[in-house]
Figure 1 (cartoon, helix red, strand yellow):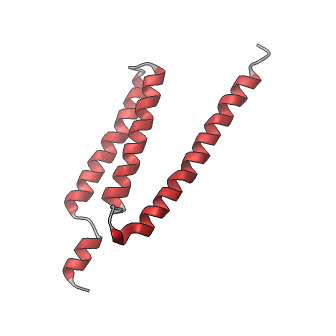
Figure 2: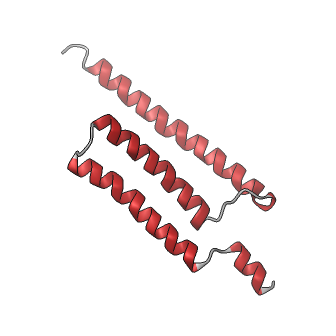
Figure 3: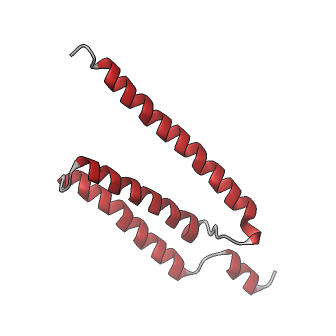
Length: 108
């Protein structure tokens, strides 16, 4: 295996540092908003979700090196399937919690 083939499959130091900085920023923003309560709750939740999706994309692209090319077809399919499962588990859990909360407070 040549040296150029190895570099192609792994990221550069620049990509890893950029990924680390973006991950820290995308983690710090939701923490700051949640701790300071600077914005309305709905806006804060929306920003947290946006930061979570951005964090996921940063992790997939800069750390896992999943890019849209022919060599990564199975990786992309696996990542999309995993995202779908996470979406259903998290979304279903939130839906259940909201309905449980609503139904448990009916007597009050």
